[in-house]
Structure formats: structure tokens, C-alpha cells
Image (cartoon, rainbow, N blue to C red; front, side):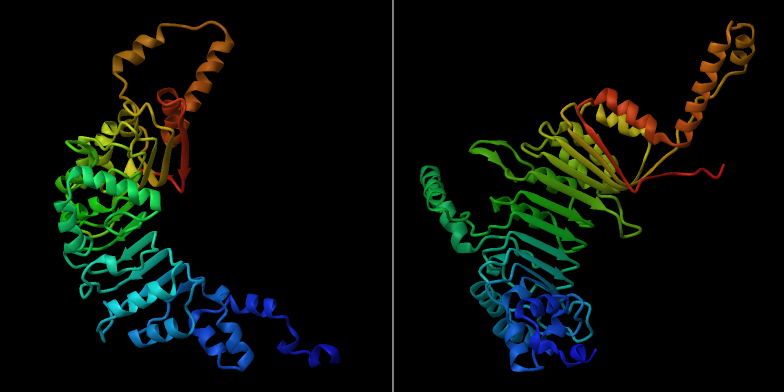
Length: 405
């Protein structure tokens, strides 16, 4: 026991100490760096600053962001999560253009940026974000009108060049390994409860050539016309719209009293190259009506909604190319047995069946019918297995609605 009492952290290897420090939050790491010189050097190790989450630190200001960037953040940063001052009583500017430029210079490997309750109206456009970003997630943020637009210089240059020159420029950029002409290399964009996101922002995304995943959750200002105008379709100069999009998610789950815009009806015109579709909440019903127009659709996910077996079967009859159908947090309505006429019961009594085997078969069928009425999932599996034999079904956290009657 005396030997263990004499031991302290000075005898631990640095690798073990770094593993221990990795369990601390950012605020605790900064405090741990004040213990001694050795800990100050260990805290600045870039292995501790790969995933930085500042959403739990409510008192973060621009001064603290500059301090973290100058002393701790570096080339090891991969993911950064920030919480803005949009809901704070103090308010003020949280992200500045100078800080974002310094971030892109000092952290060239940053690939994911998550912003919560951030007021981005002081920024001119998203091109000032680090060019290494591949994932951008905005939740509860305020956006300016031209946030997703290209800079005027790039837009005028693109208009001035001819079609032949544009094709040659694309070939040169592919050969040199450069990014898209707009300078935006984001592949996945997530918008969650962003009330200022409109059809104009959606139209601006058509210039993002690398965008392959778009997730719109509770963006209640997006309409069917806006989604229809951005859909990938054949044009005069080739495929127009969001031609590189492979995954699209549309869901309205919150905002009580919201007048249904039915943005997913914009899928009725078709969407070339769209392989995965996710529908949630109030957008499931209209989205299922238009899913048959998506010729390249392979995966379909339905979440946070109430569905009936007949509604699903009718919608899946035209989806012969579907390979995966997923239900997440779906409440299934119980099956309704067809009413039996009075004459059928009397007429059926006259017919007698010989043998106990036939009677036993009828009893087993009655049991299966009662089980299917209480739980429509087995019956839905059998129906979809006939319609979509090559499609895999996934049920996650699903339930059956119970009728009080």
C-alpha cells in the first residue's frame, strides 16, 4: 500500500495521460493545462483536439474562440461543434469572417462543422467557410438571403465564358484535382429547424456540384414549386438542377398549427439520379404519392408518422426497383376486417365439412387472422414480399395503434 501511495501521475507515460485527458470536455482541458508545464504541453497535443464540441459550453464568446484557435486548435481538428448566441440575452456577433479565415488557415483538415443557434446574418456567403468542409449542419440558425450564393465575381465569370470554354475549364480542373467552380466542396448539407431557409436558398444550391446529400428537417418555408424547380432533369445543356444529389430527406415533425406546404409533392416531376429518399412526419403522405416518379430510387425510409397497410401497399406497387424499405418510429394502424352480411352467416351454416383436418385448418386460419388484425406488421411483410421480392424490410421502434373502441 505504501508503494501505491508514493505513486503519482508523474510516473505515468504520456500516452496513458493523453488517453485519460481525452475523456475531459474542452473547458476541463483548458483548466487542466494550468496544473503544470508538463500538462500544459500534453493538453496541446492534437490528438485531444480532433473532435471539439462546444455546444455544452454556454458561455462561449468570440474572445474564447480566438483563444482556443490561437493556443489549442490546429491541423488535427476534424469536427467542430459550436453553439451561437441567438437565444442568449447578451446577443452580439459570434462568428466573424476574420475568425473563419484564420480557422481555415490553421485547421486545413476540418471536414465537419455543426452550428447550433447561430446568427449567420452578419456573414456575406458560405464561401468564407473553410474550403476543406465536407459536412455542414445547421440547427436553429438564422441565414441571410444570399448565404448559399456564389460570389458576384465567380458568377459573372461563369456567365461570360462560353459553353466550350466551360467544358474545357471543367476538364482542366478535374485533371488538376481542384474543387468545383464555385469553390464549395460540401458533400452533405443538413438543415434542421432553420426557419429562414426558403426556395431561394434551395435554388442557390444548384451551383454546388459536389453536393450529394441534402437533409431538410422542419424547413417549413420550402414549397413544392421550389423543390420541383431544383429537381435534376434533362435540359438544353444536359442535366440541370441538383444533378449530383443521391440522398434527399424531407420531414416536418414540429411546429403545431403549421399549414401543410406538402413540399414533397415537388417530387412528382421526377428526379434523375436520386437513389435514396427519406420522408418524415407530415411529408410522408404526399411523398408516397410521388415516389413512383423516381425511376432511380433504391432506398426509401419512412419515419415519425402514422400509416396503414393499404396505404403502403398501394404506394409500393409502382416501386419495382426498390431494394430497401425502412420504417423508423412508425405507428401502424390496425387492420379493419370487412363487415359480414347477415345472409352469409345463415347460408354458410348449411354447408358441412367432413373430417377433423378441415376443421383444424379453419381454426388455425382464424388464429392467424386475429393476430394479423392486432399486429399488421406480419401481414405487411407478406404483402410486400409478393410485390417487392428483392427488397429488404427494416422495422425500427415501430408500434401498433390501439383503438379505444
